[in-house]
Length: 340
Ligand SMILES: NC(=O)c1ccc[n+]([C@@H]2O[C@H](COP(=O)([O-])OP(=O)(O)OC[C@H]3O[C@@H](n4cnc5c(N)ncnc54)[C@H](OP(=O)(O)O)[C@@H]3O)[C@@H](O)[C@H]2O)c1
Image (cartoon, rainbow, N blue to C red; front, side, top):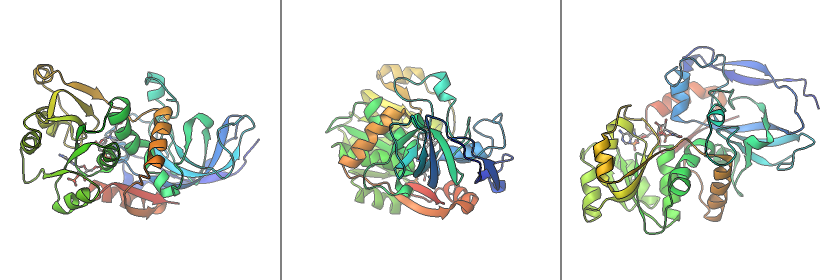
């Protein structure tokens, strides 16, 4: 089956997201196990900013179609494709080749919008194994928010973690990962502690069900109110997106034998004191998004619990640089979406 047309794409040609430009790219052929998707929406992650500036990996091959997270409608399937049919609403998987089990080096090299071309193009061919069906009732914009941030939160709490009703979870800030972690943890019956630099955002996390909220700009030792509210014990899980600037406090805020998911570096990169970890027997787990199987588990949970992503703002795909500026400013709550 041959698709002869080129498709409209956006490309990073140098490490400067203000210079992302439009250029037609060859679509290629829809092979036996491939799926052609008309892209409808994409969403931004902090990684997209890091990649576009060359901070993530200055050796990435350019030009590069950016962004890992997209959703669209299936318009054609190869003759051996079993999991999809025309008209299905699908999301891309962050790691195209991590289907199940533990991550491998090869799977880690299959990330969209980084090691391989991303989703910011009008049509894209994916291998059947690199897509999942969107949760029932989702729009394309909602489905586009899931591949990275939501799956990372899900993996931290329910795959690497084993969250149970009554457990206590600490989420840091109100970006994409943390808001999904809050929504998922609440649906599972957990008590959630949330921090933010903004009182307005703390009002919004309260509305989403956060039980305890702390302004980390006003209360610099924010681990103290967490410990006070847990009778000095600490929380069971920390969804650690801050990195060097927050992890020491996260270690103080977690209980003995508790679980810290190392996810992000929003407050910088740096080391962790091993003594503090071992003296509390903390499980410090690196999280790298998740597999397709985890994504499907999560989508079942999202549908069953009727959880819908929080989308702060939607831009057109042509406004990609403006959207990254907006994300960088950190004023958002939840996800930022681009619409085709
Ligand atoms: N390991 C993985 O697989 C993986 C997957 C996804 C993301 N990440 C990483 O995880 C981090 C979060 O990603 P994201 O997509 O959720 O980012 P995001 O949406 O850009 O999150 C931004 C928010 O983080 C909060 N924040 C910033 N500095 C903070 C600090 N010092 N302490 C507490 N909160 C702080 C702010 O919340 P307030 O405005 O409320 O203060 C800010 O609005 C990034 O470093 C990203 O690269 C890693």
